[in-house]
Image (cartoon, rainbow, N blue to C red; front, side):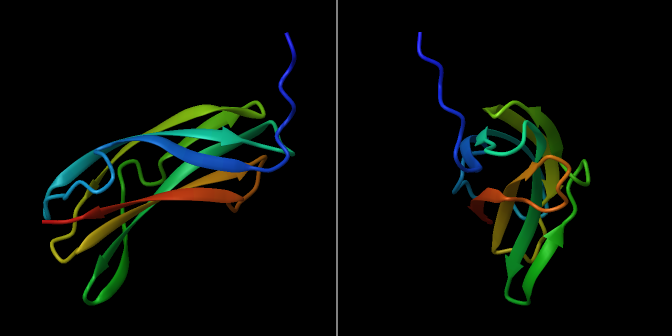
Length: 122
């Protein structure tokens, strides 16, 4: 059986999200998320996948404080899948909610690649 060649670049793709992207999130509610990603790391064999959330409104963008505050999952190996679970309050003023998911390789303090989800609000 042939072995798979190591990745040549870092990559991160969201493969499943609950609620699904595009779902209208009720303003003023607390919404739970479960996000599954597929990752590849070219240079590192350890790292993490983490998420951050932002609201978009007529007054501009804003950070949404999630629970836990910094949703993160440690990962190992050159490729695999990982899952993040967290909740967030949907601001009353939000017209959209953006979830950014990033791949942090090794002990890096910044993400090398990422993917995002966009939700409308109602």
